[in-house]
Length: 259
Length: 259
Image (cartoon, rainbow over all chains, first blue to last red; front, side, top):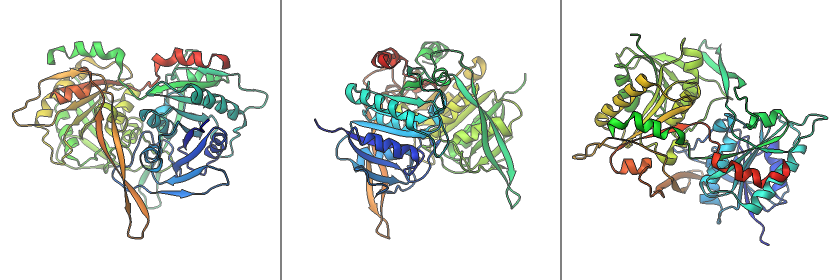
């Protein structure tokens, strides 16, 4: 059987521990090509580079069989470059991560990791974003690995509905608290209560740092936040059609006199 | 009656013709505060500045009654800064644009203009993104103005469903082809067929420029692309919950043995 071609990217940068683990795991599943940012590109959402040049050079980071390219752009740039420039054939799978930190609930729309997976889906490639709820640079990916293998196997064997990708979040490793299993979920209704810290630079000019507190307003037991709080792996199917279909008819009535 | 507080932003930058027109129009509807990028931030999607400092300074560009702030960050940064730092009360309306160029169909997920409107909706503010299908820096906003006034009046009078914002795209002005009216639409199924132009810099190192061709795969007459091609203003209600609800049960079956 032909080994699948797997595109690997992330938003923490090509040398981060999360993607190094993901590359190692993916080498067992297929022929791996890595196209990832040359430095951190967190919270870049679906940003792309349109008014500036893009750099993308082949590099060698470890002795694995994968081919690797470091790119000056965003995670979405990496996926576009891979598909349209670097690869001769369309990948069978696009995986992004393992992100250092959660991409559950509202974080999905800010996340470069997930935007890369959405871009894969946009191009008809089965795509998965993996995130571990541990921001530490030396995070423990050991428990995550088993679930990453299960989800990858499933998607490679069964494919993915067109236009949909998976947002997989994995609880942090806590002693005596093993992961209980997988829950298929919806995106929780949660948000950040943000504050800006105002500071003065050495020249007396004001600048700001974004800080914030995550608040979950969702009481449901079918959300990704519920699953993660209860130590399950959460999987949310994500789509790029963001039309609010449920509101179309109400809106049509409101504007009926202008049609 | 108390005049509404209106937050104005965009992604083309605070001095672009689109936002200057939008500010002028909004001054007729309420008290306007502008918080917009100090330079172009197109295609920034929902990117935010988390690992770097943000600058935001009050400036005066014209003699209008509005208060204006130029910000070093992305459109979403601008909305966050306005709500959490610069304004004492929550705005009654957040408008973004007028974008120089279309944000219809798949462009919505790359658009900084629309991400600012989504961020407004996330914070419970009725929000609208306006775009004109004309990339020219000296684009003619005259026909757009009438529709911008109609949509703004409607949203100020009737409010907006929580969590939803409007993506309003306006056809380019073409002689002898007046706009026919407004259509409430869904996001068309369209995408970019992209190519990268590979070049060599003066030092002999490779770089890339993103180029692409827009392709509409959608045959429906209820999409935003159809409306715009037929010279209607398109309005798509947009939500930030990107769960693919229609796929939840299929996915649950696939993973039932892991739950």
